[in-house]
Image (cartoon, rainbow, N blue to C red; front, side):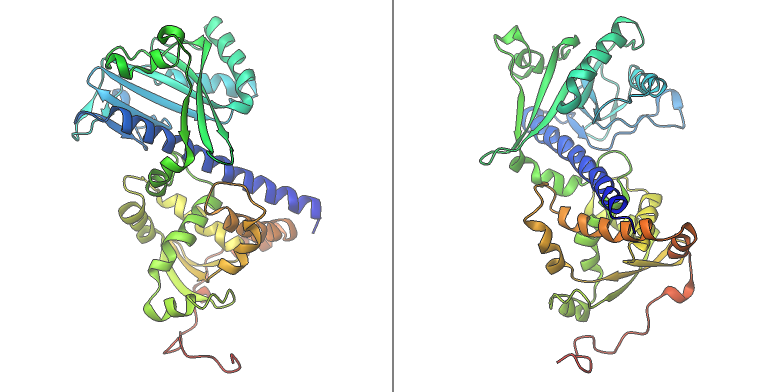
Length: 384
């Protein structure tokens, strides 16, 4: 195994995990801010997983998140680390933004669908790339590469890791695009005033990390397919323990990372459980779950029994995860597990030939667990 190739594999996989986790943070920050400030009528609705079907299209428009304030005003948000660097891909991305510039039926808090009289398009870009992307967006607007009638509001987002009060900070680009067109909101609640010189200042929106944790715990996902590592960590950390029987839970509490607790999971059932019990309105797709379980097969924490059915080799990894706790500064409660899974996955992807990797994800009925002992809580010979 090439050590450099292995480290690059781990770093790349974990970076995708970290980036997706930050997207979830951004959505959770805005959900907290907007809900706390503006939820004053039964029409208000913050939509973490929006899907719009304009003109009866079969292909939905799925922005990062959206909010309906009232019958007159809404905002569609589009979150990006940065915009594509390849020109043709950049142009395609601008076309996607233009598709939001049409009548859209927002979900309302009372259960209806409402097309507000006006909606803005807010484009959020990571602060590390903001200066470059401001220039590119301004040029696109000046040259009519990007042509929208809705207000286009360009915002940066940045995580500020202070010891006493870590927070996300959101800042509006004052010289690019438009301000919020939120005159349908009460004067005291207009972001257009808060984030411009109209109010005598030019304030940012600061959201302390601690205030949105509850919303992230139930929201969990961003409105696009998560990296398999991200969903694998969530399922392992949050869901699989609930599937154990009483004897298995007793064994799990012993914290032995070598003790495998057999679980057979069905993709359809697991997807339904995620959407019903863990991520309300999450819209988790079966293919996301299937891709995640195949990822776990390559990491050798699962085996595929048949299409849509997997044997998960669940075990208590808390002591093995502890070695990462002091070295990681990432905010995700799953980041230590993510590093562990990424290492196991990369060990095989770097070391194995393609045919060997295919064998790891190949369906085989013999991959199911052996018959369990009658009482898992009894010690095996030689255990003591």
